[in-house]
Amino acid sequence: MSRNPCIGSDLVADVVADRVRAQPLTRPTNVVFGLKNDYDMHITYRVAWLGVEKAGSEVYDDHVMSFDQLRWYSDAVMENNPNGYINLDFQQQTGRFVWYFISFRTYINGFKHCRPLLFLDDTFLKGRFKGNLLAATAMDGNQGLFPVAFAIVDSENAANWEWFLRQLSEVVDHGRNLTFVSDRHIGLLQSMSKFFLLAHHAFCLIHLQMNLRDRMKYVNAKQKLGLMRKLRECAYVPTVTSFNLKIEVLKLCSPVVVGEFLKDLDPKHWANTHFGGRRYGEMSSNAAESFNNWIREARHLPIMQLVDAIRGQTMEQMLKRQVKGNKWVGQLCPKIEKKLEAEYKTSKPWIVKRFPCSHAVVSFQNSGRNIYDSIEPYYHVSEFKASYSESIHSIPTVEKPIATPIDYLIAPPVVKRSSGRPKRKRIPSRGEVVQRIRCGRCGKMGNHNMKTFKEPI
Image (tube, rainbow, N blue to C red; front, top):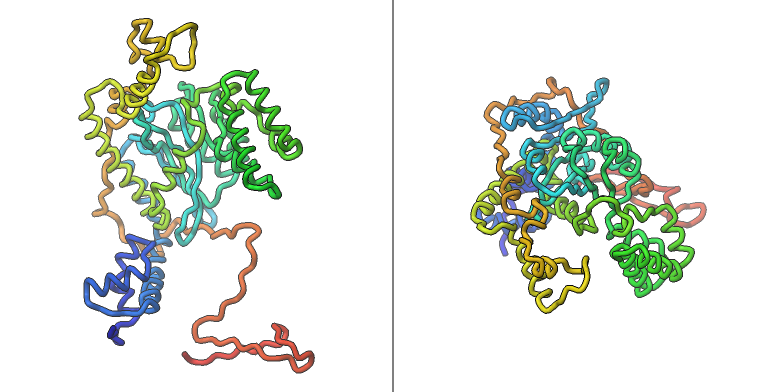
């Protein structure tokens, strides 16, 4: 295949700059095929890779400016979507970004028609300045994701979770009997009772199973799975007597490991028999994980573009669900209706001998009562429609001011390296050749006698 030697990485960078800005995960391979198909330009993978890297360097300025642009963006949000809640904070002395919390009015009002159940989780950001996104996510009546609030912080730690919960307490109705589902992060354990005195805190069962598995380093996979299954059985049993029997069986399997694992693990946070709130059958924080996966591409964007990308995604989602909900004619949301029909078919041949029984559907059949009256209102079509009765509006960029470094008030945060990360070996820069020569004294090759010189490439 012939290649055009005149096409260098600078030209490729100019061609793909807009694409890299919109899609930070642009792959050099896709650039090679794209230029071939669109412009009949034949380039090597290396030229494409260099072009993408150079385009990324230009976009780097977007990441720097984006933190200060949050000031304009916040004002624009409140103008076009009033009565939301935003908190932007930065260090007054250094001007460095600290926190950004946002909850649109549509989130706040829509959550009132969802189950009083919030999933808390965090995800890593992949932009130039890293950081973490903390989110509170609910589920609508048809079991779809419903964002309530999210924030951007420098890392996941106790102080940032405490700050997030403080902000969340400003947008959530404290009159509801709230239940939070999360992992056991120390920041959540310490801060939950400060801002949500009457709320219940449930631990994600999948996280607990993974934690138990990780404690068993020298146990074969079959035994690990067995212990994880037994822990799950303990979480699901319906009576205290059954729970006590199951927990003793679990302890006997590995007294030391399981005993240490359960020492500070209060059953009120994970076992159905001891939990004081309502989990609505949600034993894991999969909803939060789904939200993190939903914004996977946006995590690579500059901070202002990241926030607006999430706004755009939820705006489109809510419009689609408005249209979908208006087409439903039943009393219950379709997914819940299907579950009810499945239970109805299963219970047809049963005879009620005592109440309560394991499946209440057959009891309602025999009592003559309307079963729809017994189902939580959050699963009704009317509440689903109410969740999406409001819309999120676009943020016009016509009046967006031209950013200049002189006008900056907010600077990017200092990128923190993870603790315990090994120090990287120095990599020679382009144009530099590192030559290691043999020591004249000991005859060994080593860093103690290294000569470095530059050679043009």
